[in-house]
Length: 426
Ligand code: KE4
Image (cartoon, rainbow, N blue to C red; front, top):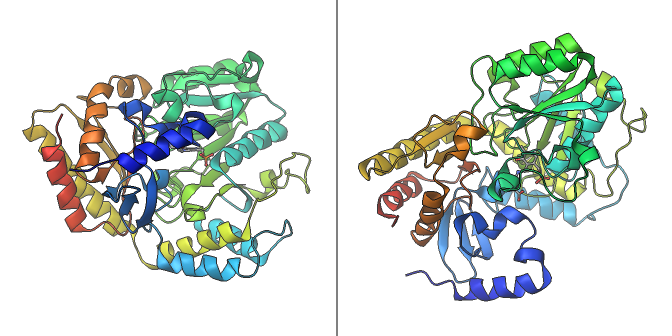
């Protein structure tokens, strides 16, 4: 029987010096009415907590660890680069190399600005869209989360949804008055809003596959309609691919849906587990960023050579090893197995999946937007999560997040996870 004695002590110590004992709210396990485990180490598909408990990890640091934890090829490159110094605040060739890999991987991206987080990537894209169009209004979709940038922290997904605080205190009304909220997958309301605000909309920002209300794929035609309306009104189309970038395929999901974004935000996987973000797009737009243009943004550690080295090593492996078809097959088997296990238990559920990102909703389904996602039985999820933890399976500690597979998850791991879903005490 797993014990969490050390984890409990570490959590108590942490809460004395860190708000809530965590450095990001969704890690606090509040949505599953438990206390967080504290990780000692990780390797491949596995986490090991301070009490020595081992887990098969389906959160993968919220997405980045697609190659598995502590991947040798990545760490070798990181160590090599670190030995030459870790931060200069002066350009390095490595940044050009990573930016070049992203440009070659994503057809709509001609130039890239590297930053240190997904939030910064989105902040850059929003400011650039407003700077280039001279407009103020931004359309975002309810349940999508784009980092904790003030103007978008309204009815956001992820932690904001989990914590049930649609708009965070501390964000002045003035900062969100230009943010228009629409239901995801609703092309009719989008058309009405675009028609109403016409030439006042700087940008539409969207997660092309939503991951922050749980995984919600775009309905047929949804993304193409956004593209058409943005083109018609001169608004910038921003794809927030912080989760989907290099997750579902090498590069962007824009190829899958046949839609080219004007700006693309990236993060997570392109840093291989190190702090990173990126905003990329057509050179005409990107050149409006300082120092070539007037739109200001900056960052002491933007393009940090150690983070960039991890990103380069990660993308090289992703490109060379044809990992994606295997990930897709394995995730399909896992989801089928979990679905069957819960059906046999008579537990109402639906699973949304694209490639190696999926969400098990305790919900009859279909889950197609925030309203349907919010109908999920979060109490049931709050029982399932700790029960799976005791079975040695680590899922995201919230119903409204995405699960991920890595290249290191084996058939044995999948089989064990399915058995755990069958045995988990609900
Ligand atoms: P960061 O600033 O956390 O690097 O990225 C913000 C962000 C932007 N866009 C999308 C689509 C994202 O999913 C995120 C961050 N994702 C959450 C989990 N869904 C990070 C976990 C956390 O907040 O601790």
